[in-house]
Length: 316
Length: 267
Image 1 (cartoon, rainbow over the protein chains, first blue to last red):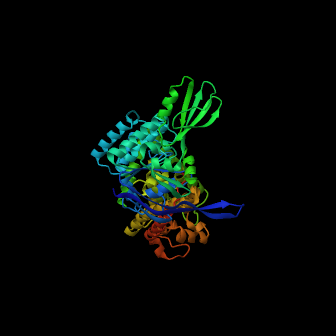
Image 2: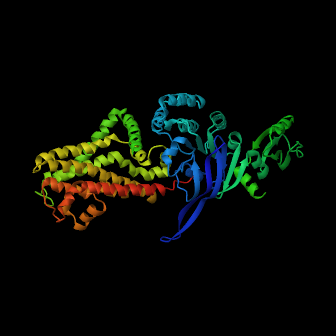
């Protein structure tokens, strides 16, 4: 497995001018990415997580050639991204969750047609790819609609198909599940898993949702204040991070702390109890054990937020 | 370059097809453009109802200057006028999308939302030019035909470069479309009249700094067979291609610098 993305001591500094008074402005530097190094092998699926403003998007923008790095060395598919941006474009697909790469006023099909020609996708390949993507992402009924009429979830699927029409070797996804409902999220994760497994597409996924990572990626990188604070497997993140999942249980009446194997009761408030279990562990046996009780009214599972994982990474 | 032209043609083509699918709307839009630009020339006609000459030029001579400048601006506006929307594109993030496609960003910026109805201004300039050529006292020669045709092509190139620089400027200055407009549409309005009505500092500015005097003024003097009223050397009247090339080089360098300094938006 040779590296398809090589990043060595990557840096990006922004000069920010803050207004101090009507005329005077302070000039100071923000180190958005501050010496990040990693390698990603062809066919890997890697999650890239961190709090807002940690430097995730800035890294991805340097990897795609949109931003020019302030320092460090960078190779994607053997190319220097910002110097050979248009050449690199053929090898990568990019999905920005908050924006669309489609033409707002054109029907979805016309956007694809246009992209196929821009990327010089041979006609046969285009037809095969479009048919496969339309089938997998369930886009058939949407093809004749202008993009502006699509719902967020539909548009996201449309954008992912658009990013894959030219068979890129690398797919970058920036917050692809943001704002999607549970079913759409699950379908999207399933699709990405298959894309990675069957077509060996390298995936780099930035997200706020740890479940995205858990279900799509085997490896996680955590960035905070512009530096990598963790790079390893998902299980290891939870072992080292020590973040915990919480099962919130509503009972018919207040009672003593529940005794369920493998969990600890972290809080009790009347008839409601909070049970805590390690983030790597399955909640299924806990839910099964609780289900045997007659007085169970409701239960829900809270996943640890990225911020909690990072906090516990620091306090380890 | 091939990639740029090819990409431009593909994207602009899609917009033209999309515009033509609403035929009535397209026809009305084009006619409106035509009428508005004619009203623009009507102001000059009305002015000449009261005076014989303006800045030493008759109405037919001014019409020639007007048409040369109008054609150059119209062609440039149709080809790369969309560059003035770059500030908005940067803010809404769509410029990021352009930077990840295998077509030079400038070609995409220019081609996206390509508006064929802008042909209205070119058509109007064509009509005015036809009249000016027949009415103005021009001693036609091969040299004059070549200079006139060359000036219109070079003029379009010069205005294209001005549009590109205006777009690039917005990478540094946020939404500064109006600054760019001052030089494009403003430059066009300025050069519609003989430069003799302006102070000589301004004439030097549009000769040596933003060379829009080469769009119509200098080559126009040659076509009309007039001596330079400011006493500037006669070779300037043939220098439009040089001015165009030089300004394109400057604009291209400025554009590349802007892309390298692009900061994108948050998230």
